[in-house]
Length: 294
Image (cartoon, rainbow, N blue to C red; front, top):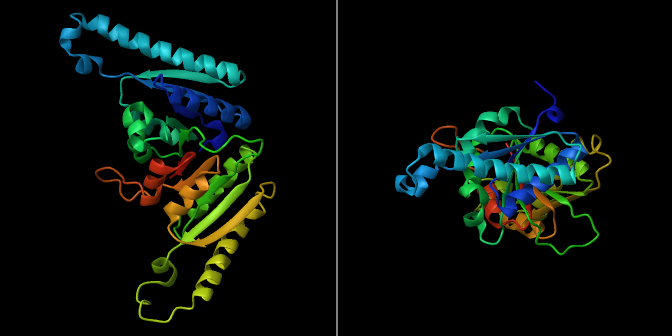
């Protein structure tokens, strides 16, 4: 299996400003991590969208679709050359739906990057509203790149990672540490716990020692983080254990972060995997970019 740094970053391109912003971020990140970029444009089914009456010549229509795709990719490639000229970049025109194409290459990708608008949630996601399908389909992490709503300052905004008691949390946290290091950003590791999870089913009729619950959760989180602290000693770290809704807590933190990292918690490979509720919520409501880690 190749080293992660040897695997390329795939970027979904559709000609929109949000996709170009995602491309710019991917180029800068690839430059800082010595990765390569592959820019992907999925050609629309123009004949179905425009109707066969739009043109009598199928070859002319096909050539026009290809021409649009080539222009869109050329603009994105020029952007990469301008912001990160040393990055190796390739372009791909595909007739496959974007989610299907990215799923087919994701086992040999380090990251998939797509852009989104935060203002109206999923209705404004670029690439034809494909972000949920992409996030469900691919095997590698997915960066949903979103313009920051936080006020611009000279301070480097943190990376925030939400963890829970699941088996995947160590992988999610490790990924967050790696991104914080690459972005030269501080890292906030947070665990928002709720009553049912913290004390278990069947405790409702008992007198609960809330102070012990809080202490136990804080101890668990610090022990969890301690296993990674030594490996990432150069990353400035903050640890937070709070009572409440994980989604609402991460939404709050996203207003002053550059990236929120969450696990995707796929539930099934049958009839389409479903993202976990926190991941879905962050795609809708995060004020900053979201990294979904599978």
